[in-house]
Picture (cartoon, one colour):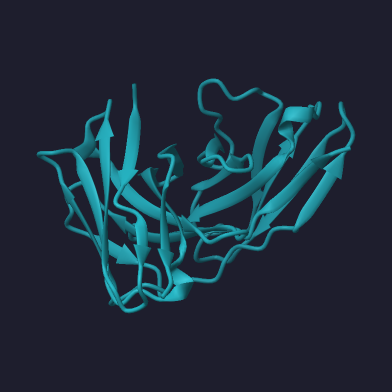
Length: 110
Length: 117
């Protein structure tokens, strides 16, 4: 049950694109197409932004996209906006009703 | 409206017990797995425990195994977390979440647990 590995911070200017990586193992990220990404603003509950590696819940802008290759998943945010500044967490299903989160990445919009 | 609402948090002494509850509404509760996720002050999200829709399967993070017990009452649309032998490191905001395999799509606002003497 080791946490997935994410960069501690990323940054970008408004209008630019940023990508956040999430590295796990063959027992979690690599073993299932069940990676999700949550956004969390300070003092707020997490919000699901991407599920099933690349699907967006209703209401999430198409500026948010997800992908996976092997044991590494990625979240790309294009056309950065000020309100995208938040913490982002990846999460992977690890089998038998267990999940594992990444350590979180702080996105700063410059 | 689909929502979950946690309750039961508070201040407890080390070694003590606390029971968290989560009330679900707006979806067919028994159809979905549920999870508890916590966030220690200034730290990231940590998956704590999960339970299948029928309650036939329950799982725990190593950090809480043997001390916490997850349960659900599908007739009342409620999810519980019984926490025993609490430690300072269990201090966190505890979130209840509707758990799809591919992601947790409904989150509550959280309930705060503080373990301190």
